[in-house]
Image (cartoon, rainbow, N blue to C red; front, side):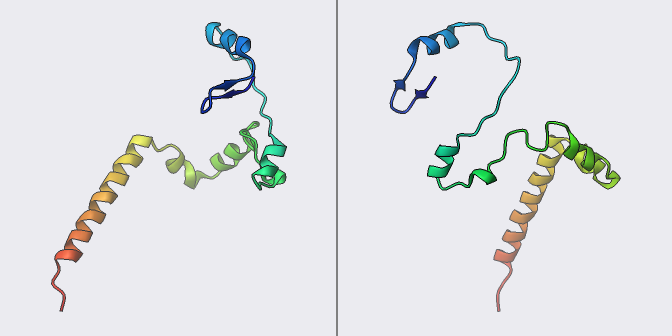
Length: 105
């Protein structure tokens, strides 16, 4: 099934209609890499990483969790990080205003 939304080109309209009208449940996935397209885009096929590279077995996450000094960072909520980013942005803005208002000699 190939759909090109920019030009409105669909190779198999019956398959597309079946996908859009049906009730589907995902039970698995298969990640493939289009090597010829990557080569045409000047991307080395050996540099392409799959979506689940080093993550399917959880080994990378296990190595991170084995380091106790990383636990506070890994357990930090996203809202807390956004609050810190907002405070840092305010501090940078105030610092810029102070530098701008400070008289130069």
